[in-house]
Image 1 (cartoon, rainbow, N blue to C red):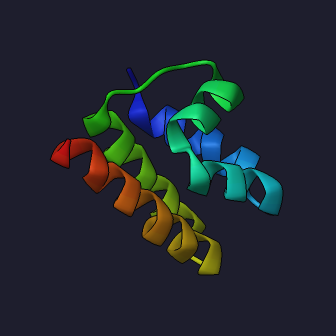
Image 2: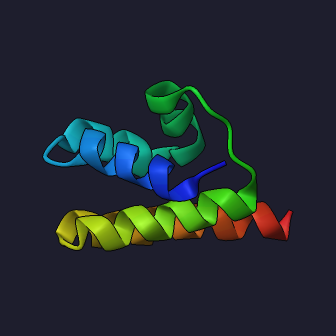
Length: 78
């Protein structure tokens, strides 16, 4: 799977859309599945989140990082 392509598609859909950013922040796996129709494993999700956060680079990117990275950490501690 081309994660760069996934990141690019997500960034284009998330940019300027606070509702989608909120959805992505609260449940990134579900948002990716809804927006792109794909499932990602935990490692892929972590890479995509970092890429999207970096690409957005603004307060939205910081909000994504804070919310999603906490959720990803939870995947590994269970």
